[in-house]
Amino acid sequence: MDNKQLLFLSKVSDILTKDIDIKELSDSLKSLLEQFADAKELKIYIYDNITSTIRDCVDNWSIVEEESEIYTTFDAIKGNDFVINSKAYKLSEINDNTTFKIDSVFMPLVKNEKIFGLIKLELNTSLSNDFLFLMKIFASQVSLKLQNIVLDEQSKINVDFHDSMKNIAKIIETQYELNYIVPLIGEMLDRFISDHLIYVFLKKDEKLDLVWPKACNDERVYEALNQLTPETEYILTNNDKIGAFPLTSDGEISGCIVARSTLDGLSKRDISYLEQLTRQSAITINRANTYSKILQYATIDALTNLNNRRQFEIRLKQEIATTRRQNNPLCAMMIDVDFFKKVNDTYGHASGDAVLRGVAGIIKSALRESDIPARYGGEEFAILLPYTHIEEAQIVGERLRKTVETTPIEIDVEGVDAKELSVTISMGLAEFNNKETGEELFERADKALYEAKTSGRNRVCINA
Image 1 (tube, helix red, strand yellow):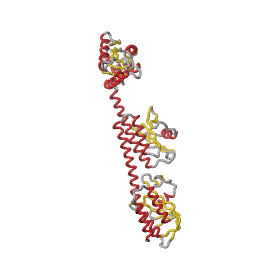
Image 2 (cartoon, rainbow, N blue to C red; image 1 turned 120 degrees about the horizontal axis):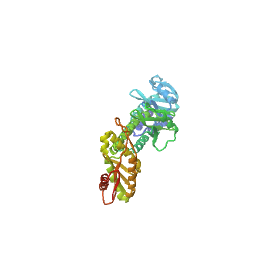
Image 3 (cartoon, helix red, strand yellow; image 1 turned 90 degrees about the horizontal axis):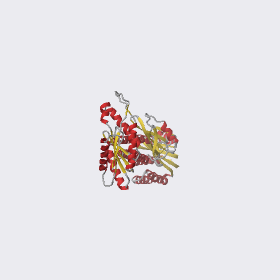
Image 4 (cartoon, rainbow, N blue to C red; image 1 turned 180 degrees about the horizontal axis):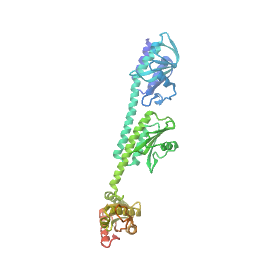
């Protein structure tokens, strides 16, 4: 080996000791080879075991088309030292006096006696056996550096992936609202699968509705959604540029995550990551739904579907604060079902429950959206009427009382002959004044209710 070759290897070593990325490495090696061997191009290809594809490391790790000569070269070079002008050679088979007119030479990148990539050189010169021997040493040196770069790149992807998985899982620890959770999940997926647009759909009324981002104008996305079944793992369409990954819960589709690109198809690695991220997203979204139901049942009375007493007391404090701040009128209404004990004793508690549900339904249908009804306990109901003076509240109360009196409540209880029951209600009203608390307001409404019951029932009384 002459001094020129030793100098070349020394300069290669200098390059490989630098902390540079694969593009800088390629550029530096090409510049050196241009000086030494009139090289026109240097390319580095790495085989991706996860996706079973070959990637062009210099070109942003893009996937090489399967029809490319790179795939056939990768197979041909196994067990050989070079592929020169499309023909495979072992160095030992080349005579010392042989001189090649080389257009291109491929050299294997080897780790643990297995080829994990290729270096491609395009040359415009005739080169000897000595040069090929030097290139074999060169490829061995570069292999070690590339192993570390590839490992770092893969580690970064894995770290990003696991960070995304953990972040998606952690969302549920502090947030329960889907309208908050879904955009966060969408943004995380969008950052991780950066080459594709991400869409998140959730099922509503038996239909998958887009919930993130705000719009999707590609009809092919919706066509992919229509192909989903509960057994579907994922669907790829449009030359793998669109992937639909269903979110499932209890064997049913609860939503879908779609990845769409106008350039490259989803790789096997992208698909693997999206499958796992979708599963984690489904778990998080389903937990959010469960928590939402738990929270709902913690604030909603299960029998009547009105606010329970605890939630009503929270809303009362909020409305009192708003009323004090804005100086708006506010009225309270206490309601009791007349002779309710007699209903239970005569027809049974199941019929009593039906009566309470029926009265609650009438109350809810008679009120505005801004009004706040609750089951206060037993057969008692409480209502807050914001922005309402006592005269208006009395009109509402009388209308509600008459509606209950004239509306038979359906009883569908096994063993009970009666199919309908008619009941009446008594009601007490009070208007808030700034000198009292919310509790004092309802104490006055309760006193009015007591007056209504003791003075004959089925009437509205006011505590002025």
